[in-house]
Image (tube, rainbow, N blue to C red; front, side, top):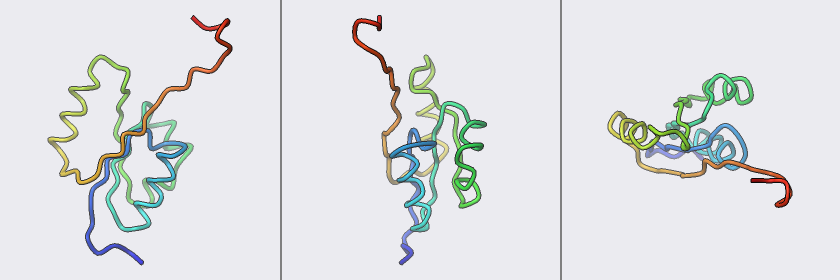
Length: 99
């Protein structure tokens, strides 16, 4: 059943994992989805159906110095109903090997 009340979702880290799964489901329900990713070209290659299904990629690296200003600009440009703050960074290795 498709939702008759269309909402705009902002999903950070939408190019893989949980963010990707949530984006797929929100799009299936008829919602607009703004998906953030660090690298749009990589996301387009690994998740090509996102844009085909109506999603919009937005470049946003939460670790960059201008991340806050970019997020504010995104919120001013779009009428966002739902925010899923999912972006993360994996640093994998043995404790003794990491610094």
